[in-house]
Length: 312
Image 1 (cartoon, rainbow, N blue to C red):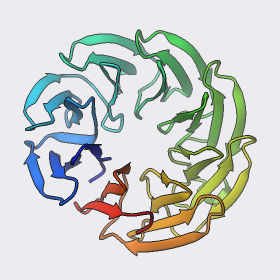
Image 2: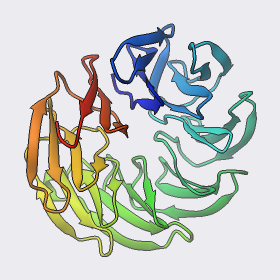
Image 3: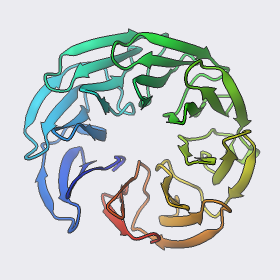
């Protein structure tokens, strides 16, 4: 179940077994489930749920009952889960296009064509989108029109989903080589610093999470690193487990992460010291969502989890 949950009020939505499930966030009771045929993580504008189909299509479902509102055929990539922003649904595909669809009708509002496939999700700050294409170029575009603001050619060939905060965009070169975490000025694309992957992350690094002072990023088949936002140097390393692809969740001064050993871990965000861990009944390898004092996640074994409080 590699899907990040969406929480809207008292309902959580997640893709499991190629179906979309609407689950009561308090009790875990299933409210409705769709027909089969979906992948990835959903997005929502609080009216519709947007989710990718197994054949590269994009679908809008009514959040109340799962009724399909519209469908758009295409070549959307299953790992480029949609981004819903300002009446648009944005996702990329194997054809090298980033497309923006009208969230109400599914009509295409704009598309941008790159030199390689778009295989990860875009991130946004204000009206600007940030996304990489698999020709080693990282792009900033207007979310309204798709007009390119700037592009940056890198030494890598593949990007993870970026994170953006306070005018700086952070992106790793994913599973390409060389493996680096890049910090770029969101307005200009100027390189601010780079962090080379440590030797124990020779297979690459995943998508980062960011708080006021640090960037947190895990290595593929490795642990977790805290990187100073101001100068790009490593402040601590945690090697208590191989960290999965699940997003590092930040709650106050605590970090929530999941290990390939089937445990959820809570670390002190300042020091990297482990505060607690607990088995969760499977490997969680997709995104997490924090809402209403709970951390929601889904395991590969089909378990949907709600972890209550500041620590498991």
